[in-house]
Image 1 (spheres, rainbow, N blue to C red):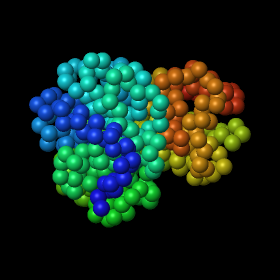
Image 2: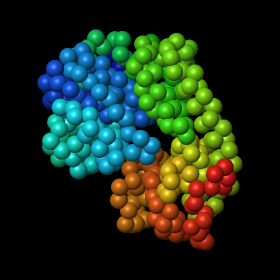
Image 3: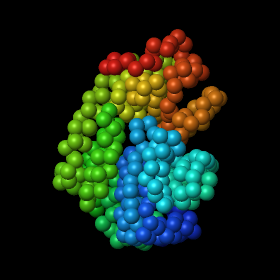
Length: 365
């Protein structure tokens, strides 16, 4: 059985919702459709699946990726998308908020993140609330499988699923699908593609190009498509930055450990995961003052199964936007320096000053 195609009418999303989303895609024949996926492997895999299905259906497609620190509701990204002049929009794996994305443009949102808000007027297909929650790539694969020949595209769903949930995720048929795709090839391809967006060069567009060219995970792992060498360079940079920034000594407040460092690479989630393994009883916050100018981007992780979104919201801080989003066990945010000091004060860290959260070049901590 192909991954996700179980015949269960309620999984990975209700059959009626899947049917409505398919009708949306089928209606795009001869129309110009903009596909906007998130830049992680789950998002990129979803984007490739949507692009291939739309092209099979006869649509003209353009893709756009959010820039460093952006998402579907970022004004700068919305401005770039609007300039495309597309007749329809498909947004994948970028969460959901109530504001419209491109007003007046028919929009399909495909996602798996927890949300009670959806863009006004958009058609939404979500796997959230339908256990086990499928990542967006698997949901997209289930969506497009009746519209394409599904077998040759299964590896893309495997790639995104493993990237988000790991090789042992409790999803129907994953074990067999992973065997067909090649476990080693999948895990190596995930590492290379994730490094593209985590690199200080932010090469997510290269990751998308590599995925579009590849016919299997092995094509990427074995370097059979152009662009893989550049992905390997990104991976080396990220590995060096993780090693460097993970040397930062943590500060403690109760059961919270704070690591504050500066890197142009998106290594704060990886540093948080590494330190959560070292400090199993703590909530680890890895904060990066060098990722975006004037902001502190941070990742929150814990080895214990805590609801970290609830933990952040329980601080009752007046933050909206880039704060306490994502998943219950993998969340974080992006705050101005002033807001970040307010955040750490609420956590019980005393004595941090503005110069502690300034961009500090190569300083690890």
